[in-house]
Amino acid sequence: MIKDEIISIVQNLNEKRGVIFSDITIIEEKYIALFTGSILLGGTERIEISIGFPPHFPLILPDFFIKDNNRYRAHVGSDGKVCLFDTSAILIKKGMADQLLIDCFDQAIKILNIRPGSKEYNSEVCREFDSYWLSVRQKKAYSCLDTYGIKYRECPMVISNGVSVIADTKLEAERIISNIFGLAIDKETFERTCIMVRIRNGSSMIPLSKQFKWNIIRRYIINNTTSSVKNQFRKFLEKKVKHSVRYVLLIYPATEGDILFGFRVEFNNSKYNKIENSIASKVENAYIERIDYTYLTMRSGATATLRDKKILLLGCGSVGGYIASNLCQAGIMNIDILDNDILKPENIHRHLLGFDSINPSKYRYKADLVKAYLEEKYPYADVDSLNYVDRNALTFISDISRLKDYDLIISALGEPTINLEINRIIEENALEVPCICCFNEPYGIGGHVVSINLERNSCLQCFYTDQISSDIVHFRGSFVAPGQSFKKNLSGCSSAFVPYNCLDSQQTALLAVRKAIDILNGDLTKNTLSSWIGSSEKLVSNGFLLSNWYMLNKEKGFINMDAATNPHCKICSQNDGK
Image (cartoon, rainbow, N blue to C red; front, side):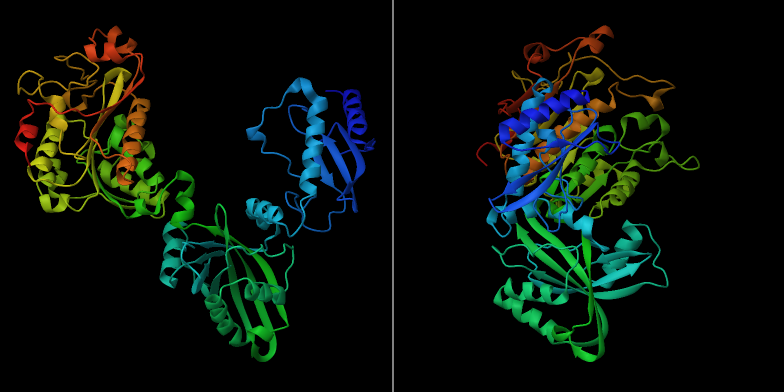
């Protein structure tokens, strides 16, 4: 859009809203046109506003700036720029530039009319507090403390290699610096005292400023905490110091969760004096980067109960590796992995791990590598790669006492014989541990997730039992006709594989993890078969046959059905009456 067109649009704004915005000749390079004018807020306050039009207007919104912005306003940055909209949530109509400018102007006025001290102001400040505090911070620290349940706490802050970490103990803080951040604990490492104070529900946010005084912070805490917290804070104020540095962190309970921010306070008294009466003090705003479990997993929808669940994952190959990673991303951190397979170069293009996990001098077990990968990526992951009797799945699942310890068993082995043996052991020993069996079918035609042992009226073997006899047959939910072999090899039997790609594995893994979360949260209480359905083109073009089940369901794209009792299943028939 050329400048003359923008001038016409601004004149339309002037007429429709009774304002006067005039063109500025000298403008910044990032704008093709810049206008200035004034508006009256609340009938009493007149402020000057600039409107800048970027080169791609109206596909990009105009920028509104307050001139001489001398106090904090909601949704106004330190540079005076007004944050109008979340542009990812709106569709800009290119042919309606006149109306777009009017809408943006109206939104700017609405934002600037938010009255400081009002509930709306407090709510809007909390929504953008993190970004504001980052822009005015002088110090930064990491906190691995879950703020939930903290009312008042004194804890250590360890500073090493320029990184500050707050934790329950000095040892825990040092572990995070060395293990998570990969920094050596240097000789200059030292410790600070840090206090965390929870602000009372319903309190207004502390009046925002680029520079605070200690008496303002102290008064805000005393006026906005519960009696018990106030008493503990007064004990802190009674301490006598001469020269001392303390970090004071505030936990503000907002609608979307706790906001954590703080201050580095340096007291400089000529003699020992109570902290409460310290006048000579320097305050610096401290931005607190939260790395606690609750905060890191909040966006993934994790619940507090998931962290305590213990999962046994059998197989961490193409499907299982992605399952392990997705479980951690969902907040499930306690995972035991059993797999006796070695990671080789031919695995990497459909595995979670890449070529950087290949050691040319000695190949390593996939389970050990996945453990290292997850614990490096996710600070709260606790993965055991189960070096158990040659890592043999059949040996492990025979140990009933160990199976009882798990909240869920997931088999991504893709071996129906072993899966059926797991099913038999669970049923015969009446184990109350839910189980998921998942596997791909060849050439991207689909994948399956069978959830069992959530009820006693069906089991995995029901899907492998003939409907008119007790014979064990091909999986009845399969999308390919029985009696076909799909294994291919490029250089002999040792390199044999079933043809499917990493996208198939990821899709099956995602489906399996969704079912796992539903089971662990108590949302799934029935045995189910869930399948995704892909294209049959590659399979058919390679000369293979489809099943009748695929032909009946191919248009659906997805199957989710309760598992029905098979009266001919030997395991379920033995459970009748139990």
